[in-house]
Amino acid sequence: MLEIADKTQRLGRHELDFYETPAWLTLLTLAHIPFSGTIGEPCAGHGAIASIMKEAGFKTWLNDIDSTKPADYHGDATKPQHWKTLPQADWIFSNPPYGDLSAPIVQNAYQHARQGVVMVLRLNWLEVCADRVNFIKHHPPTMIINVPRFCYTKSAKGKWATDQCPTNIYCWDKSNTSGLTRIVSLSKDDIPLFYRTPDEAPTFEQVREEIPRRINKLANPSGRRRTIEDWQKILDTDKPAY
Ligand SMILES: C[S@@+](CC[C@H](N)C(=O)[O-])C[C@H]1O[C@@H](n2cnc3c(N)ncnc32)[C@H](O)[C@@H]1O
Image (cartoon, rainbow, N blue to C red; front, top):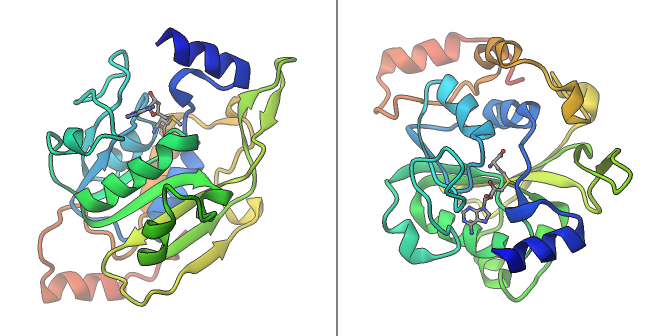
């Protein structure tokens, strides 16, 4: 642990790469991805993503390697053996630590998820590095949501600063076998509740109010098979995706 702490201080990153995902980013994902059933969060931190998914009606389980974090399970998501101890999930949705740990975590998540995976990762995650080239070759993401840079860390002078590389949302939807990647590029004006620094974050009450307006038409929190009446209701709903 000490060794990790020394390294992260030198790099100016938080221990275990703990950063909270901004609420607007989870809401945006909720608007674009047809989540269903149970959502697993393998690097849950304080539950920034999972709390919104739970509020939207999904069953969730949370894992984090850090035993001080309020998760259901505490284990290393880079290890395939640990995933064998985690419950099943229709979708895995996380903002994992970046750097070398992200490739094994994304690949384990892909093996584990029944329907799909959503990960918050750096824009350069698609670089064909040895630890993920085969995975990217065989499983190109089905969607990338390209968002403006935001601040989640402070500079040595204590001011909010952006990362060296922008952060995006990557989705692998197993029901989409087209082999094509859809890229959705959004400016800050396209993103309701967007904020650039955590100081501008809305309250959880404000976030909660947004959820019904955002949730994707095809999302299915109950995970049960849909009836004709369900489909009729979906087709009759005329609200925008976000
Ligand atoms: C970028 S933070 C994101 C936290 C949370 N997902 C969120 O969106 O607010 C990454 C989290 O991954 C956890 N973590 C780091 N290494 C891990 C590992 N090998 N297995 C599981 N969790 C890990 C850290 O403790 C930290 O809480």
